[in-house]
Amino acid sequence: MTRPIHIEPGGCRRVSVSIRAFAKINLTLDVIARRPDGYHDLRMVMQPLALHDEVLLTRQDRLTIETDDPTLPQGEGNLAYRAAEVLAQAVGHPLGASVIIQKHIPVAAGLAGGSADAAAVLQGLNRLYGLGFGPERLAALALRLGSDVPFCLLNRTALAEGRGERLTLLPAAPRVPVVVATPHLSWSGPKTATVFRHFRTEAVDRRPDLRAMIAALSERDTAGVASHMLNVLEPVAISMHPVVAELKRAMLGEGAIGAAMTGAGPTIVAIAPSPAGRERIAHAARRFTDMVVETEFLV
Ligand code: C5P
Image 1 (spheres, helix red, strand yellow):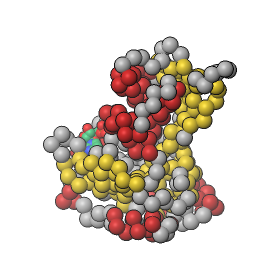
Image 2 (cartoon, rainbow, N blue to C red):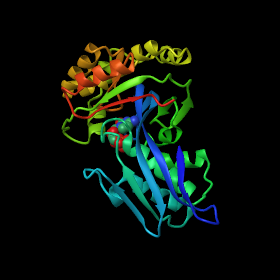
Image 3 (spheres, rainbow, N blue to C red):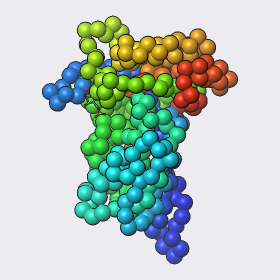
Image 4 (cartoon, rainbow, N blue to C red):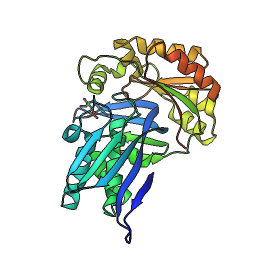
């Protein structure tokens, strides 16, 4: 979604574009098999949230990336910088821009914030420079940046397979009020790699019912969507950090009609029965963490 904020007088060359980079959650996440390249094949129902970062791109000679979150790498260490480099490589010349990222999506939370910002940079530079890259070419570049980045270009309810790059559109979810709550945890190594390393197929006792989830989406059945949310990585994260289960229990205890961890965690996403119910659930989650956001599905 883009909003041109300034058009040069007398011409149609954009000097700035502002892009909203939406968070994503997993309604379901299943691990299918370990691959020879060390990754796992996944099958996931993915849903964008209204929660988003703002990415403002302005033409200039050099490429610079700044964010208002001091814990994130500014400049070259940021995935958004790599996104600009990958696109510049594909066109064969540098694409200078000032990129300013206003963060609202919790970081390292399983909400694909970094991937969303990178996707926004691909889209933003494509428009700023009138490159004319279509969705497929952008998606191929996006995959070089990370498994979630192609989905972040799409921003619609979808089935994601492979590492997350094989996308099939699904019926759009209803506009459901949700709470996302991210406990502050420390991991023994990089979070996603650690969670996958501890995953054991033989330990999985419940897998997502994909058919039931898709049927619930088709019928716009919020209670059905909520009751079929399931992530096979959740028990792995809970075994390392039991507070994730306590947080989930507290949100369900306050009236959430469904809740599950997203991605490799540790964020719990809870579906609220109403906007008023969402407030109560958020209040309960704040006993565990200050990273609690009240939002809704992006439709
Ligand atoms: O996608 P990303 O590079 O952040 O993943 C970090 C690590 O998590 C990978 O190196 C791999 O060990 C593990 N992973 C996996 N299967 C996936 C995604 C990540 O095994 N689909």
